[in-house]
Image 1 (cartoon, one colour):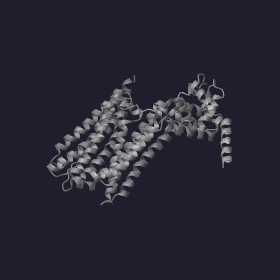
Image 2 (cartoon, each protein chain N blue to C red):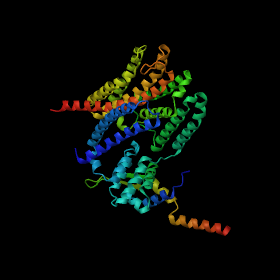
Image 3 (tube, each protein chain N blue to C red):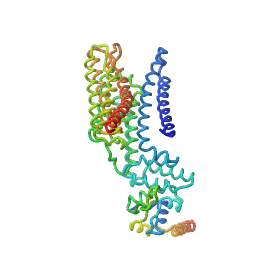
Image 4 (cartoon, one colour):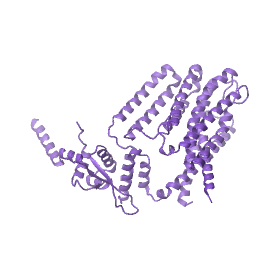
Length: 105
Length: 396
């Protein structure tokens, strides 16, 4: 059974799933998710290793600037996202579990 | 030469000189006070001579590196330099991620954000993630087990080698764990079967002859203090690292590997012949150890640089000569010391009478340290000479 992604990985997956066909930059993903580069890049590398992330290089980089690396989810990655509880759903489930525990107590 | 280049070069030279000065101070601070004041002056002169060689060699290496990378380095700010240093250590299969992080850093404008971004990425570059942590865990467990069992097992079989065995197990274990943690695949770049095979066999031979020497002459144990045992383990670990996973920059020239192996063989055979020729004389093969490397390292590196048409090929030849030659000379030293002691009762190195056979052990370890320390900078000088020669030929 595949391991459940960490909250940080889940945040990156949801950020990428917001607009699946769009290519995203690493730094923009950092700003959107609030993750530091030291957390973001290992996640991106592992998602790419597992075939969940498609990568490419920017074609039209301005002169004097290195081309940037771009990311978007693969079909397999999108499938995984649909199986994950959304942050809202996850919060709702957590509240329900807490309520059940309090009622049980 | 630009002002920046000169400034960096001066800083590098000062750092090298400081290392040697610190070494001289530590050696005298840790050892017994010398019998004569002149020994301070003599040792300082020897250390200064070797330090001068290293300063010249490091300046040559620095200039060669600067000629390739200086323009881009001088245009970098602190964060970019930090990230570039981290990215340079990435395994081959993660190089594209290094380029990706570098390109993203160019988009970060705020200075403190740049530092944070670069620091995070540099950490990722030094310890890239693995898809499975199992190999790292396995390597760590094996290393810890080896360290824990080395003390009782070696202590039972050969107590004199206990400190050495534990240090070697710890260093090799750390090296293996680090290698497992840093790459998603087992390291692919090796310096070729000749160097790898000879290096590994050489290290094993050095351990085997030391163990044999200590078994045959148990009193020699008192000549292997913890500092000597640790030094021996550190040098052998360094040799293993070079033989198994050298930096990519040292593995590009096949010619350098061949020339290095040939020069090392010459060094070893010459040592053996000198040792045999000096039996029953007041001399020993130390005369070979002191003077032969000047010619052999210089010539091997110069020929490699001239034939390979690159300074780097010459430097590589010097590194491989030092690796194999040092192991070979050490592996010959102890059996030869036993042989000479049985024939004329003198020490091997410089033919002295009245000392126990055990003193040959610290002498041999000293050679293990001295040969690469003296040989490598001479090799760099040779590489520079060879490189200059083929460039002169090319000039109209």
